Image 1 (cartoon, rainbow, N blue to C red):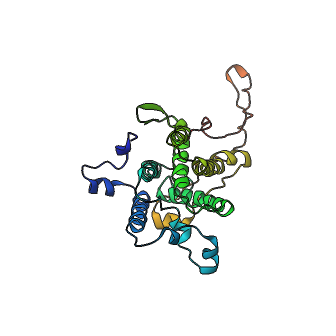
Image 2 (cartoon, one colour):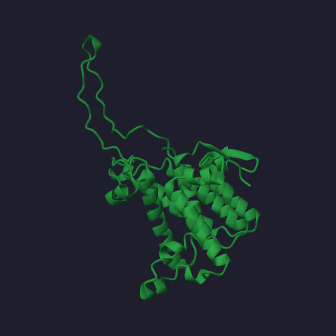
Image 3 (cartoon, one colour):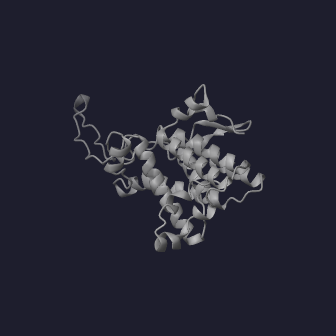
Length: 264
């Protein structure tokens, strides 16, 4: 199994570890375990959880919009891998997400999930995919790697920068004989979110993603200006240099701290 799972959510006992997880990650963990246990013991059927758009629209079974993301299948090795990815990288990202208006709090993480899962739900509609839990896990992992591209991580005994983790996990899925189209969908959704938050604002001159006020009030956080776009400032007036020579006027734009693409 991949190492480093204890880095976030450390605790001396399982109970301490559980309660040390950030709130949304903890809720996702409970939901995944509950749906898996319920289906494994025959309490509910997976057919009651999958995303069926006909039943959503005509039968008003709106729970399917959420339940399809938190069912990872019955207890198995793929289930453990997907649960690991979810808990590990959701907890890491939730404690320090991209600031989209809530000061880098759980509210920003919740808004990222809302946007990303909406994109995946649209993909589910067009491709007829019933469960999107694995893509959601890969989406969260991908966004975390774009937030922390230089952090060292590992798979088994192989250590590398976090930026390469999504592609290493794709290779791992191929090695164990799994399809990769669902993970690729998750990576694509994560990249769309990253593009809208980090890349597009620099081109458009304004922030696109902003965490709603109601979500900040519900989950906590400090309302702030999203951290992707910094407004341009007018060129400063030239000042006289020593010896009477005029200083060269500043002719550029104020784009912020000048982060390298892929870092924040």
